[in-house]
Every structure is written in structure tokens, then in C-alpha cells.
Amino acid sequence: MIRVFIGYDRAEAAAFNVLAHSIHAHASQPVSITPLMLSQLHNIFTRERDPLQSTDFSFSRFLVPYLCNYQGWAIFVDCDMIVKEDINALWSLRDSRFAVQVVKHNHEPASQRKFLNHVQTRYQKKNWSSVMLFNCERCKALTPDYVNQASGLELHQFKWLGTDDLIGELPRRWNHLVGYDAPKDDIALLHYTEGGPYFDEYQQCEYAEDWFAARDRMLFVAQGVRAAKLKKHKTDKHHGVHATTAAYTQKG
Image (cartoon, rainbow, N blue to C red; front, top):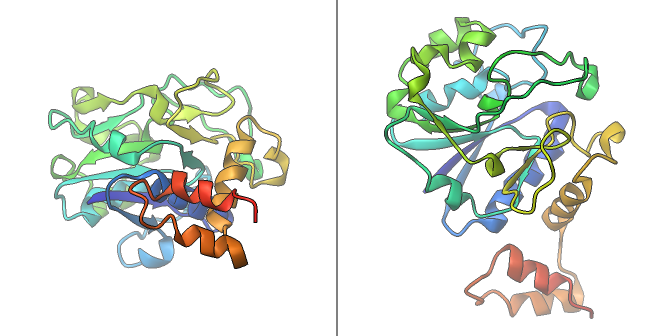
């Protein structure tokens, strides 16, 4: 079972649901998806909201190893993303030499503000923690007490590891920063880090059409004749995003 934790923010509920569906729709293996909702963590996550944090999950993401009882592996992703390929391909990159694996961006935002007028913070290793492949057994420093008390830089710059040698590198295609990274044909995960197209002011952003297409697939309900046609695809060995898309795009 592939374990995925998605940061949940009340201001971006649609983003969570579209991302979760995009993961399931492309997956070739069973996936368990858990939203990191503060309303479900109130007995564990007790730190006050930092004036600089832009999402509800800015710090709660580091509770993932604890929530997994420091056993096995887990993936964390921000909610402002969609997955375009099989999440099993990311899962297969697990490397026991490392405590955590990330895309090692050199991200230096040009703007002062981002979505919902939040301050755009700048620091080394920015966006490394937006996609993390956790080797939970080797992340025991991330206790609830530590996560509740550590500074933002201590957490997001992985100072809790003691050495950067324990940070493995993932291919950049698994965290493509929309609006910063040059467009490519092999993108596996789109990250709308400045603001997703579900916000009015970002509806014309790069790759907006990909997000809206993913949203439409998530909202799809077969009606009438189309519902009957869709049932014929349930035995297709490739049943999932490809079979479903083929089914509901048929005329009739």
C-alpha cells in the first residue's frame, strides 16, 4: 500500500480533492490518502499559527513520520498540485540510504506576495519540503513536541537531520514549479506554488488547463446512455484514468 499524506487547507478544499483524484486515477497500485486536517490533529499539533505561514499545513506536514508510528515509508505533498503519472513511479524511488528524499530546487521567488496576498518568504531549500518521500524510521527526531516548538527554518531546512547527507534527491519532474521551471514534456507532478487556478486571480496561469481538466475528471458523473457505456469499461485491465476518460468522452 502506498501511503500519501496531503496538506489540507480550508481555503483550498477543492485543490485537495482534485489532487487526490489525480493520484488515484493514475495509480497502478492501491493508494491510501490521508488529508492533514488541523481539526483532526488538535490533540497532537498545538503550536500557534505563525504570521508568516501561508497554509494550515506549513508545519503539520512534519508529523507524517509520527502518524506512521515511525514505520515504513510515506509520501507528503502540498495540496496545490496535480499528479499526471503513476504515483508508484515516485514510490519506487525509495532509497534506504536516506531519511527523506526531495526535489532539490534552487527556488528564489521574484515576487513579494503570493496567493491570497500571503508574504512570499525566501530561504535556502525553499520548496524542498513540498514533496517529501519519508523513510519514517529514520525521522524519529520529528516528535510532536519538536514539531510544535521548532522554528520554521529548522523544520523546512531539515536541520532536524543533523546533516544534509541524509537528504536524497528526486527527479525534478516530480515537483515542477509552475511559473518558475521551464515547460517540459515529461512532467509527472505540477506544483502551482504561486497560486492555483482555483483562485480567480490565477485562472490564466501556466498549466491552468491541466488543473481544470483534472477537476472535470474528478467531478464527472455518468448520465443515461453514457452510464451504460461506462460500465462496459469496468473489466478493462487498464480501468482508471485512461479507461474512464475514454468512456465519458464517447458521444451518445
